Length: 227
Image (cartoon, rainbow, N blue to C red; front, side, top):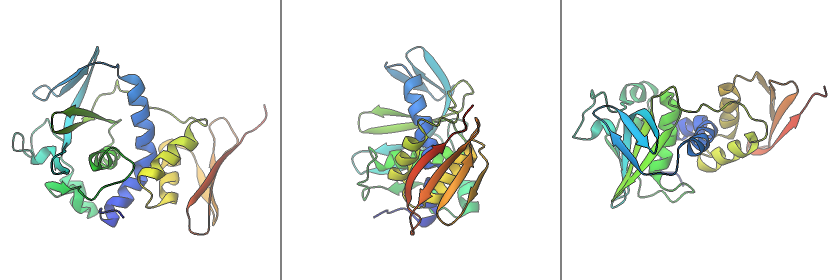
Protein backbone atom coordinates (compact mmCIF):
# COMPACT_ATOMS: atom_id res chain seq x y z
CA UNK A 1 0.00 0.00 0.00
CA UNK A 2 1.31 3.43 -0.92
CA UNK A 3 2.45 5.75 1.84
CA UNK A 4 2.16 8.78 -0.44
CA UNK A 5 -0.74 11.18 -0.29
CA UNK A 6 -3.51 10.78 -2.92
CA UNK A 7 -2.35 14.07 -4.48
CA UNK A 8 1.22 12.81 -4.91
CA UNK A 9 -0.02 9.47 -6.26
CA UNK A 10 -1.99 11.34 -8.94
CA UNK A 11 1.05 13.47 -9.75
CA UNK A 12 3.09 10.31 -10.22
CA UNK A 13 0.39 8.71 -12.33
CA UNK A 14 0.27 11.76 -14.60
CA UNK A 15 3.97 11.57 -15.45
CA UNK A 16 4.74 7.88 -14.96
CA UNK A 17 4.81 6.74 -18.60
CA UNK A 18 6.44 9.98 -19.75
CA UNK A 19 9.22 9.65 -17.17
CA UNK A 20 9.70 5.96 -17.97
CA UNK A 21 10.31 6.83 -21.63
CA UNK A 22 12.62 9.71 -20.77
CA UNK A 23 14.69 7.63 -18.39
CA UNK A 24 15.13 4.86 -20.95
CA UNK A 25 16.34 7.39 -23.52
CA UNK A 26 18.73 8.84 -20.96
CA UNK A 27 20.25 5.44 -20.18
CA UNK A 28 20.97 4.97 -23.88
CA UNK A 29 22.41 8.49 -24.13
CA UNK A 30 24.86 8.41 -21.24
CA UNK A 31 28.07 6.38 -21.67
CA UNK A 32 29.04 3.62 -19.26
CA UNK A 33 31.65 5.61 -17.35
CA UNK A 34 32.45 7.23 -14.02
CA UNK A 35 30.51 10.35 -13.12
CA UNK A 36 31.14 13.59 -11.29
CA UNK A 37 29.00 16.59 -10.43
CA UNK A 38 30.00 20.20 -9.81
CA UNK A 39 27.07 22.07 -8.30
CA UNK A 40 29.10 25.29 -8.18
CA UNK A 41 28.81 25.34 -11.96
CA UNK A 42 25.61 23.25 -12.15
CA UNK A 43 27.15 20.53 -14.30
CA UNK A 44 27.16 16.74 -14.35
CA UNK A 45 29.80 14.81 -16.31
CA UNK A 46 29.75 11.15 -17.27
CA UNK A 47 32.48 10.02 -19.62
CA UNK A 48 32.59 12.58 -22.44
CA UNK A 49 29.08 13.91 -21.82
CA UNK A 50 28.52 17.03 -19.71
CA UNK A 51 25.03 18.34 -18.91
CA UNK A 52 23.62 21.30 -17.01
CA UNK A 53 21.84 20.00 -13.93
CA UNK A 54 20.41 21.00 -10.55
CA UNK A 55 20.19 18.86 -7.44
CA UNK A 56 16.66 17.53 -7.02
CA UNK A 57 17.20 15.57 -3.84
CA UNK A 58 19.00 12.66 -2.25
CA UNK A 59 18.08 9.26 -0.84
CA UNK A 60 19.79 8.00 2.32
CA UNK A 61 20.08 4.21 2.46
CA UNK A 62 20.59 4.00 6.23
CA UNK A 63 17.18 5.38 7.22
CA UNK A 64 15.55 5.13 3.76
CA UNK A 65 14.61 8.80 3.61
CA UNK A 66 14.46 11.49 0.95
CA UNK A 67 15.93 14.97 1.48
CA UNK A 68 15.05 17.67 -1.04
CA UNK A 69 18.02 19.52 -2.48
CA UNK A 70 16.65 22.85 -1.27
CA UNK A 71 16.50 21.46 2.29
CA UNK A 72 20.14 20.38 2.23
CA UNK A 73 21.98 22.66 4.70
CA UNK A 74 24.79 23.14 2.15
CA UNK A 75 22.41 24.99 -0.15
CA UNK A 76 19.04 26.41 0.93
CA UNK A 77 15.79 27.11 -0.94
CA UNK A 78 17.15 29.98 -3.05
CA UNK A 79 20.41 28.38 -4.19
CA UNK A 80 20.68 28.20 -8.00
CA UNK A 81 22.14 24.68 -7.83
CA UNK A 82 18.94 23.10 -6.49
CA UNK A 83 15.37 22.50 -7.62
CA UNK A 84 12.75 23.96 -5.30
CA UNK A 85 9.21 22.70 -5.97
CA UNK A 86 7.70 24.06 -2.74
CA UNK A 87 5.72 26.87 -4.38
CA UNK A 88 3.98 24.62 -6.87
CA UNK A 89 3.60 22.00 -4.16
CA UNK A 90 1.73 24.48 -1.98
CA UNK A 91 -0.43 25.59 -4.91
CA UNK A 92 -1.37 22.00 -5.77
CA UNK A 93 -1.66 20.96 -2.11
CA UNK A 94 0.91 18.17 -2.46
CA UNK A 95 2.47 17.77 0.97
CA UNK A 96 5.44 15.72 -0.26
CA UNK A 97 6.68 18.70 -2.29
CA UNK A 98 6.71 21.10 0.66
CA UNK A 99 8.13 18.82 3.37
CA UNK A 100 11.89 19.06 3.88
CA UNK A 101 12.33 15.30 4.26
CA UNK A 102 10.25 12.21 3.43
CA UNK A 103 10.25 8.92 5.29
CA UNK A 104 10.33 6.23 2.59
CA UNK A 105 10.96 3.24 4.84
CA UNK A 106 7.52 1.89 3.93
CA UNK A 107 8.32 1.58 0.23
CA UNK A 108 8.70 -1.98 -1.07
CA UNK A 109 7.53 -1.49 -4.65
CA UNK A 110 9.13 -2.36 -8.00
CA UNK A 111 11.49 0.63 -8.23
CA UNK A 112 15.02 0.44 -6.83
CA UNK A 113 13.91 2.61 -3.91
CA UNK A 114 11.35 5.20 -2.93
CA UNK A 115 13.89 7.79 -4.02
CA UNK A 116 13.46 6.71 -7.63
CA UNK A 117 9.69 7.15 -7.32
CA UNK A 118 9.92 10.64 -5.83
CA UNK A 119 12.41 11.70 -8.51
CA UNK A 120 10.19 10.33 -11.30
CA UNK A 121 7.12 12.31 -10.22
CA UNK A 122 9.03 15.53 -9.51
CA UNK A 123 10.96 15.39 -12.79
CA UNK A 124 7.74 15.37 -14.78
CA UNK A 125 6.28 18.23 -12.78
CA UNK A 126 9.25 20.56 -13.32
CA UNK A 127 9.46 19.72 -17.03
CA UNK A 128 12.94 18.24 -16.90
CA UNK A 129 13.93 15.77 -19.66
CA UNK A 130 15.13 13.34 -17.03
CA UNK A 131 16.86 12.76 -13.72
CA UNK A 132 20.29 11.20 -13.31
CA UNK A 133 20.80 9.06 -10.19
CA UNK A 134 24.34 9.33 -8.88
CA UNK A 135 25.22 6.62 -6.37
CA UNK A 136 27.65 7.37 -3.58
CA UNK A 137 28.57 5.63 -0.33
CA UNK A 138 25.39 5.59 1.72
CA UNK A 139 22.91 6.88 -0.79
CA UNK A 140 21.92 8.29 -4.15
CA UNK A 141 21.87 11.91 -5.36
CA UNK A 142 19.32 12.79 -8.03
CA UNK A 143 20.26 15.47 -10.56
CA UNK A 144 17.47 17.03 -12.64
CA UNK A 145 18.67 17.78 -16.16
CA UNK A 146 18.35 21.39 -17.31
CA UNK A 147 20.04 21.06 -20.67
CA UNK A 148 18.58 21.27 -24.18
CA UNK A 149 21.13 18.78 -25.47
CA UNK A 150 19.58 15.94 -23.48
CA UNK A 151 17.48 13.49 -25.50
CA UNK A 152 13.75 14.18 -25.74
CA UNK A 153 12.10 11.03 -27.11
CA UNK A 154 9.15 11.41 -29.45
CA UNK A 155 6.15 9.20 -30.03
CA UNK A 156 7.06 5.60 -30.88
CA UNK A 157 4.20 3.21 -31.63
CA UNK A 158 6.48 0.21 -31.06
CA UNK A 159 7.58 1.14 -27.55
CA UNK A 160 4.43 2.94 -26.36
CA UNK A 161 2.78 -0.18 -24.86
CA UNK A 162 5.92 -0.94 -22.84
CA UNK A 163 6.30 2.65 -21.64
CA UNK A 164 2.69 2.79 -20.47
CA UNK A 165 2.93 -0.59 -18.76
CA UNK A 166 6.17 0.45 -17.04
CA UNK A 167 4.58 3.66 -15.82
CA UNK A 168 1.51 1.87 -14.49
CA UNK A 169 3.69 -0.61 -12.63
CA UNK A 170 5.44 2.22 -10.79
CA UNK A 171 2.43 4.49 -10.22
CA UNK A 172 -0.84 2.53 -10.51
CA UNK A 173 -3.06 5.18 -8.92
CA UNK A 174 -4.96 6.31 -12.05
CA UNK A 175 -4.58 4.27 -15.23
CA UNK A 176 -6.65 6.59 -17.40
CA UNK A 177 -4.66 9.62 -16.30
CA UNK A 178 -1.35 7.90 -17.11
CA UNK A 179 -2.47 7.03 -20.62
CA UNK A 180 -4.15 10.37 -21.33
CA UNK A 181 -1.11 12.37 -20.19
CA UNK A 182 1.20 10.19 -22.28
CA UNK A 183 -0.91 10.91 -25.37
CA UNK A 184 -1.13 14.61 -24.52
CA UNK A 185 2.64 14.85 -23.92
CA UNK A 186 3.18 13.59 -27.46
CA UNK A 187 0.56 16.00 -28.82
CA UNK A 188 -1.79 13.27 -29.96
CA UNK A 189 -5.42 14.31 -30.20
CA UNK A 190 -7.58 11.80 -28.34
CA UNK A 191 -11.14 11.07 -27.28
CA UNK A 192 -12.44 9.06 -24.34
CA UNK A 193 -15.45 6.84 -23.76
CA UNK A 194 -16.43 4.36 -21.04
CA UNK A 195 -14.06 1.62 -22.18
CA UNK A 196 -11.24 3.28 -24.10
CA UNK A 197 -9.07 6.25 -24.99
CA UNK A 198 -8.48 6.58 -28.73
CA UNK A 199 -5.60 8.75 -29.98
CA UNK A 200 -4.91 9.82 -33.56
CA UNK A 201 -1.43 8.75 -34.64
CA UNK A 202 0.99 11.12 -36.43
CA UNK A 203 1.23 8.75 -39.38
CA UNK A 204 -2.54 8.27 -39.53
CA UNK A 205 -4.62 5.58 -37.92
CA UNK A 206 -5.30 5.30 -34.23
CA UNK A 207 -3.84 4.07 -30.96
CA UNK A 208 -6.53 2.47 -28.79
CA UNK A 209 -6.08 2.03 -25.04
CA UNK A 210 -8.73 -0.22 -23.50
CA UNK A 211 -9.85 -0.34 -19.87
CA UNK A 212 -11.95 -2.71 -17.77
CA UNK A 213 -15.05 -1.83 -15.74
CA UNK A 214 -12.84 -0.49 -12.91
CA UNK A 215 -10.82 1.71 -15.29
CA UNK A 216 -7.75 -0.50 -15.11
CA UNK A 217 -5.62 -0.61 -18.24
CA UNK A 218 -6.14 -3.77 -20.28
CA UNK A 219 -4.40 -3.33 -23.64
CA UNK A 220 -2.97 -0.95 -26.22
CA UNK A 221 -3.43 -1.60 -29.93
CA UNK A 222 -2.58 0.25 -33.15
CA UNK A 223 -5.06 0.64 -35.97
CA UNK A 224 -2.88 1.67 -38.88
CA UNK A 225 -3.91 3.19 -42.20
CA UNK A 226 -2.74 1.38 -45.33
CA UNK A 227 -0.72 3.55 -47.68
